[in-house]
Figure (spheres, rainbow, N blue to C red):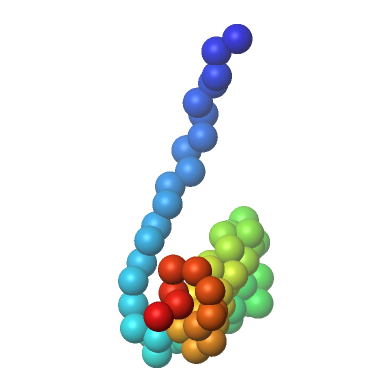
Amino acid sequence: MGMKNDDDTVYCDVQMPLAKRREVLQLVTTMRESKAHPKLDRVFEHIQDELSTSIDIVENPPTWGPWFQ
């Protein structure tokens, strides 16, 4: 049975300074809480998770893994 490839997912890797990450996180949170774009709720949630995680890694670097100096 062949695999059907109907996944139209796109990936976006955006790099920015920490201060801008905080600003984008606040913007996304505001947009999500406004409920103005209900179809994007899951997207906003994923953006919030990604930004929160990356901010946390910068502020509290793990003492293991590739980040450990």
